[in-house]
Length: 284
Image (cartoon, rainbow, N blue to C red; front, side, top):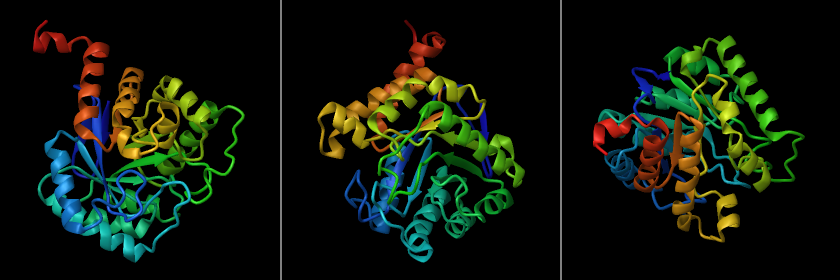
């Protein structure tokens, strides 16, 4: 499958893609603001690209449960210098934002993808993405980051998430975004209980059958901590790699992770098992 971006095309024909995360926030759940400064964020983006990330996802607003929004001006000031620096080095950059103005600035600075957790919640977002011909990730979320974990409810979580994502994709296409530029994300941990997350992961194949590229982000999330008994998010990388392998087996296009080396190893091994043809290249 091919995913068309602003100036290039990504493919998962050879292997499942890995997206590495750069959080430029003081309150990230996963790394505690470790890369909050511009210099630190650029260095981290370069590092994960060298480690093998196919895409570097740069975000300037926390979307952890209970998080509150920051202004577009503040978010732009955090992400755009980092996006520009990484894009100028030839790195495929995604901007993680739900604000059209931030997306426009990042795309002008060289971003290839908009990773929109609100799935076009900003009415101006679709026009920005269409104008630049960028790739877009439409994620499912019940509620907002500040409310999403207050008693999330579904009758059939997999069916409802699939239906909502296909409706978001249809909205994007009607607004001028070409189908081959759209990627869907079930939003693990975004308005879901532990049971909801596990069901969505179990049923990933149903979402893959939609025909859109599917992105999955489980990295270091609280449901992993609850199941594995790991209260510190930074201790969850090994368990995350297990979900990566399962996602690859289900046929997803890409996984979004914090620990690129560990998840890259997991993804490559899972690809080799699922695809089989890798053995002809590396020997038996």
